[in-house]
Image (cartoon, rainbow, N blue to C red; front, side, top):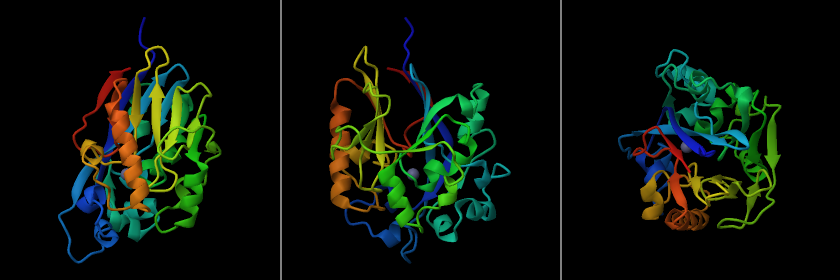
Length: 283
Ligand SMILES: [Zn+2]
């Protein structure tokens, strides 16, 4: 019997940030993490990963990465980015580039997959590098965003630009209907516990980890978005520099670490882990 659960990790360009943003720890200053401090560190380039999941419920896409509008010519383009991000401030905090053929939708097209074939696009949180590509997924069956994240984003207009999602007719704002996770707030997408979106607040209020479990084997994978910037985040409990609540962030990291030690865990993945290469795993 062929395995019905597969994860494909795709790299969809890169993001450039201050190192403190990713691994600033408990005493990071927001100014330094955002690049507004006079004491600048050399910036780092990190991958922007998305995950295509094959499951009996159909194809799922975890986050979208950048839109083609960030790099209309496939190369770094400051003017285009400021327009795509809707703000010079956001451009200052993070820059991006996505070569030709490497946006999420372009890579899916190479596999013969159209946006309409995607059962659900699952957004971990609403920061630009996770949903700026949504304009390419207007025809996906639905786009799942937690209502808590949506409300949080509407209140923080400097960080979030509603144009990234406001045109969508397939936006599905969900409320917690289940109690898994560090704050006992989760959403069981199909009502059968195979796909759970688990609130891991700290980086934002409504960020979710996506836990996908094969009910026949009990094996699962966990995608944590920016709940950590790499394995060392949860191994060594290193919080990121942009944080709305350090205690929440640590409680979420603690939970991620516990999940990673579960013998059924086939992998914990962050969006910007520089040590991860494109891959496919079955679970
Ligand atoms: Zn990110």
